[in-house]
Image 1: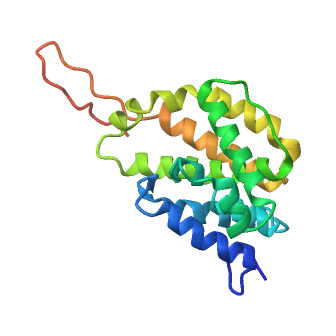
Image 2: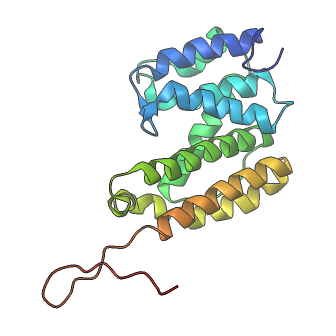
Length: 208
């Protein structure tokens, strides 16, 4: 069995169904949340071919805590509907994300969680660069994301700390995705400077 390809491991099959249920109606990266979940699972499988079915399931369900109703005991659902070992991974990913958003210093949890988080970052960073490139106004796109840009040093430190926990190829992928994201944000087009009379003048191309 090979991760998301049929025939799938029963744990992965059940996780796919539950992820589709919880993701329904939610959007991530301007796309259905279920598509994002699948991309993270595929990214994890690409760089960590020996990932366990529980890791793939957790990748598919890593955003479930954001979508589930407060009245639902997600731990029990994951244990009984998916299998043992998935809930701790999902909870750990959610805890690390909450810590990042709270301004806590970067930290690296166990290897499986770190690998899932790295796959998630590759997908998310790459999606942001694509969306910026398609935006009608790239300056406005990044101006609305100053909070994200303030996290760049956090991401850099996290990538450095995570290196020993990641396959070299995955560490390279997440570092490159972050570098591309930072370059896109810094190198965004700048508005033309107004002339003294108030109109904008497009500079002539350089000779030659």
